[in-house]
Length: 509
Image (cartoon, rainbow, N blue to C red; front, side, top):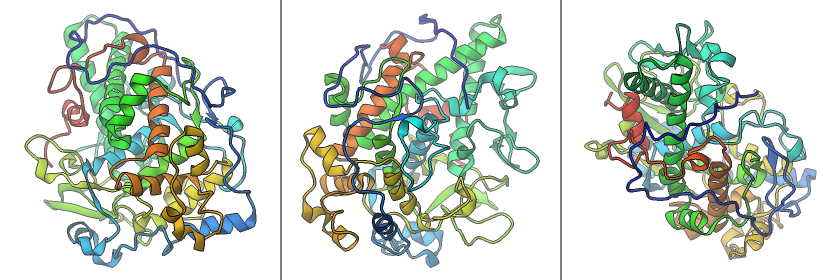
């Protein structure tokens, strides 16, 4: 899938007040990090950060060990009592002993992380467990935070995404009570990335970004009523993307990796990942580490407050055993009056702080529904249905190095053998040469008490996030590094609750 190139960004500050109160200012400096693979492909697809040997060979023995590690009922299964139902799993902590609350995150952070992933990477070609050269694997997304998962190829290249009589605005439809994604006769969402209809919450985020853009269109037209529709669209998209990028750096990345790590990467510069402008790739080490978000998924959620005949709609995240018709879980792909999001559960709005639910901490336990995914949400429609197994087999696909090897390359202390002793029963070598994804989860659990990522995972994520922001030629960093958001409650700041309020979806419902 290709995306249209953004129009040249005008440096005018017409739409922004003077910069004030910025938390972090990125400066347009190119660093040459040491110890990294400087022979990455020119743009777009996948690459590597480190030249390190794989954690293990792709043998049947290793494949079997990875499948054993990620199996249902195995070491990584949180063993949630799914028979108790979605409400009990939320209110009774004894039913989910391995799903500890992270009071520094709210439940929406998990899904926002999923949305970001879908905006920068979409691997459509590699096969689970089969060694693949990252440089030959196509990325169907642009490797930047440019909302191409929302905008597609723009009004010209993706006309079905936009109102037919107003090319500056996105199409939206109704689910019977509130807004919904536009859908075809079969119920399939008409959106730039089909993954953003995987569950109700990610679909709700897609809707929020569509409405966010449409609201900015209104503001642009109010200020400049004679501006042609194409120019209105370009200016609205620019403002939407720049606010989104500011939010990523100032709200999301600190939650994932800790404020100190972000500050170090921004102030001292990257040590391992600094793609030239317009030439970013997605490192496979990052792609594996970023799957840490699967550890934050709860077994069940309150989707909204009024969707179940005026009562809250509680549901499992997925239920592979759901019968025909409308399922009682939170999967997407269909429209009904109860399938909408009440955002006060997912983000902490002023005046509704008590409604927000905490996220699950980052550790080596995944919620039990993730070990039995419905086949319909798996891109190939084929097993394995355990998300943990699928993540672990990716280490063979990318011939990824171990967590310990990357720790050594970074010059940070590695986890000790006693931290990973549970792996000895899976495979004797995994204690000293641990699959990167498992290592990142364990590191967060041991060194950060599950509140954010540890030294290896945190550094990988922070460097790639900041590197992608710096490499985007159309982003605010490359064009106006002192950009100050103007759409939030407070001038010079902008967070997810601000975006939802501007989009008009923040009312309790």
